[in-house]
Image (cartoon, rainbow over all chains, first blue to last red; front, side):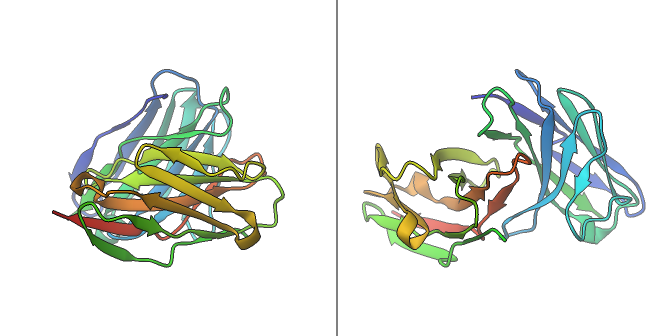
Length: 116
Length: 115
């Protein structure tokens, strides 16, 4: 199957700083990418849909100014957690949708963010 | 509204036992897709199966089998002769017919297989 990478896999940052997470589709072009958040022992919660060349669509309750999403190319979407706080600590997972196989979302390995 | 319910939060079995993970879904779409994913401790989601709403045939893949019943809106997953390596969190997910491609995940079932 198609490969999606995320970088970094783990990041620790201090409260008040911003951190950027990258999601890349390695062998296909993804017009749509998704960002999920997962709390310990919980399910995946969709945060936003990232569309190449346009603004992201955020789910209800997700602060767009807090979680900045940029999908500047067909293989890269970034999620920036601005002014991070300890409650932003979580596991963030991206997925990319391959337009050639419209049913499939390919998931990245996830990024574990810890805010101290 | 679309919803996926996995009522079993945690299941513990002894190796070689069969185990069934339940998944019940809600959707008003006539066309939809159902998925199962495995999430081992590493965190990476592993795709197991996709089933579309028009295909009610049950599927078997090695020790894994899936029972899709539209009449009860269920898509259950059975592991036969479970192994310790099957220990993970398993998620059932639903994608409707809209072109957004959004996946709705169930709460997940943590399966522990003891030796």
